[in-house]
Image (cartoon, rainbow, N blue to C red):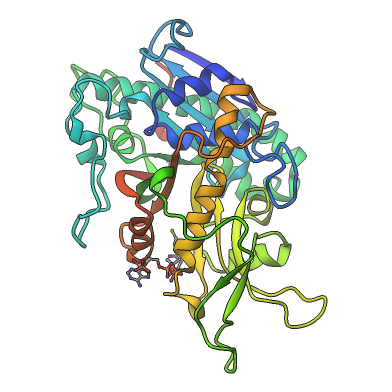
Length: 409
Ligand SMILES: CC(C)(COP(=O)(O)OP(=O)(O)OC[C@H]1O[C@@H](n2cnc3c(N)ncnc32)[C@H](O)[C@@H]1OP(=O)(O)O)[C@@H](O)C(=O)NCCC(=O)NCCS
């Protein structure tokens, strides 16, 4: 096995390798494109460099003794991670393994999408076992070996970084409980089949490493994939207002029209944070692109309050789609999400072709957009279906306990 450990930004070869595995590699590819500068200058603060930090690592583990050459080595199995340990309790790592690419041989056409739009209401959330059921014991063992190597390297990086963070970010990592958690575990976004494989070693004759990873937290979502060309045009970039269909405000229950805007002030970010249970920081929310609808100002010098919003998350997915109750059922969420996908899908493409600083939008880029939606969230599923998305594999947020990872091979 060969491990490539690059500080802060991905290489072009790494980005191209991941792009060869679309759509399966989408979350890690997008996270690395954001690290490479996809959001520079287009976030509300207009800042650059927020997608990465001096603490970040790009890790690739290849199933070979050296970095594969050839056509970017896309025939060699690998696992890839972007690691930002200091982001805890936000997601600190994203992991992709090429074995989760369902288009790899043996190809079955029906495997491109592991699921479709018409599953029943009692859809199973925990789908890890189902997702890897067709994998050979050798494929499971290889995938485990590569991902375990990344997680063990992550542990080594966190342990080396702990005293640095305690000195440089004392308000967070100087606190004993935070410092202890930092060297004890890591929050990772991972394909749900890979989570299952990490928890369940295969037969000993196929998999010598008997490590069974321990998790202190597990939360599963369905990955919904959108194609740019399927997303309907529900508003136009030149539109400045959205007609809600509500009557003139007499009772405080909403306005007939709202103004297109973004989440751009500290008050905006505080409102968003107050409406979600997912840990999000003001700093992160203001560093990513967003689309929002705001009430018109009712007094000079006073901004109207946001009533609906959506973000392009640091992994390119639709983040925190929300409509305030007074405005629900009036098409705000679908119009917001469609506008956001059409506006920002193209910002990722240039990062692969032209390098880190080039941020010119080419319209639709590679055309892939995504949302992670809880299997129990019927409203959000409704929004995704309405925008032409397909429900595909399951993804999980897990908190991995470092002690359970065993030692390097
Ligand atoms: C999910 C949410 C954003 C929808 O907002 P909204 O503005 O009311 O949604 P829209 O009016 O744009 O509805 C879009 C589609 O979703 C579906 N939908 C909306 N509400 C629904 C409900 N209660 N049940 C089933 N489907 C629903 C409909 O299919 C609708 O399409 P249609 O108008 O063409 O029929 C809103 O309910 C909300 O903020 N919920 C709480 C936060 C949340 O769950 N966010 C998502 C996190 S991933």
